[in-house]
Length: 148
Image (cartoon, rainbow, N blue to C red):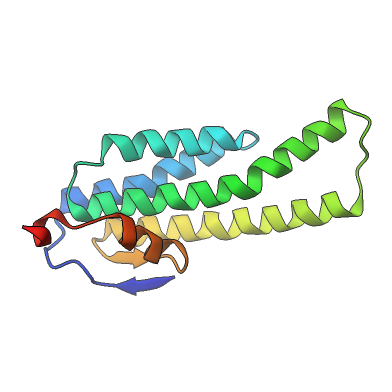
């Protein structure tokens, strides 16, 4: 994670709250849909769509939250499917399954802590980039104010 200030415009209270809410939305989605990773992704996507025309700071952080949920989904969905194939088919629990679940739980814990931290920082109007997701977000989200 990397704390920077790439935004030329000042961030007002409304923008800071909206940006912070993008991370809180994913937190609520995780709590509600713990066992169903698609719900987390859908909830974050809906929040992203609702805020895609907001100020650059808000759009940027909604996009970063969405990308983090996509990455999390790529790890959680196979774990979810694998568990259901064990429960509803003749598959058995094995060391590979437990190792993958341990990795997925660790990734989810790291993402959970990072999301809380990022929500707090953005609520204060500070920009905070995640190591992998931040550069991807910069490549996708353009600052309309600087283009003009």
